[in-house]
Length: 189
Image 1 (tube, rainbow, N blue to C red):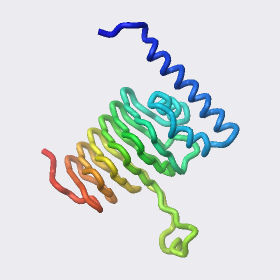
Image 2 (image 1 turned 135 degrees about the vertical axis):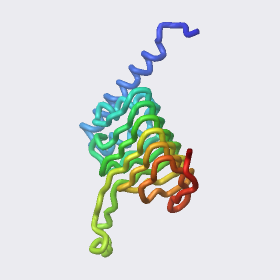
Image 3 (image 1 turned 90 degrees about the vertical axis):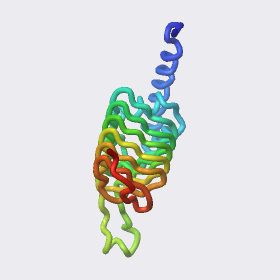
Image 4 (image 1 turned 30 degrees about the vertical axis):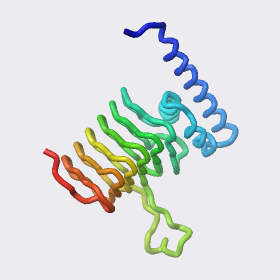
């Protein structure tokens, strides 16, 4: 049985709006990169609010943990998270292109999402020009801890990505994959 007047929840929201203002102030005075660093130090309620108010699309009943790092962005409009999804602690999101996470997806801690390659300072750039590509994670999928998902990758629905995997190509639905690079372990019935 819950008692009280919801004071704690109200305090959390007031604190989140205070952090939203602090983010906005840093952005206006010091630039987006400094404000973006501030995001790594705020609580879960503040992260969600700041992301939504700065362009991200986050569905209902989502759990977004702390310590997230966002790279290559001037806002968060390339981040789309569906209803009832979980983003674990200390994940890294390269938002040069879109990262779309559909409903009922669980992403464990310290996962990395890379949406571009750009080696323009190297002589290799004439062989490997800068490219970007979307990452799409379809509904009811699971990504284990410390996975890396590369650009132009679609993880189909009901997929299981084993911890520590490197996903370099599309994953078919109802598949368990793992390894470096990730390969099919088994089909999930």
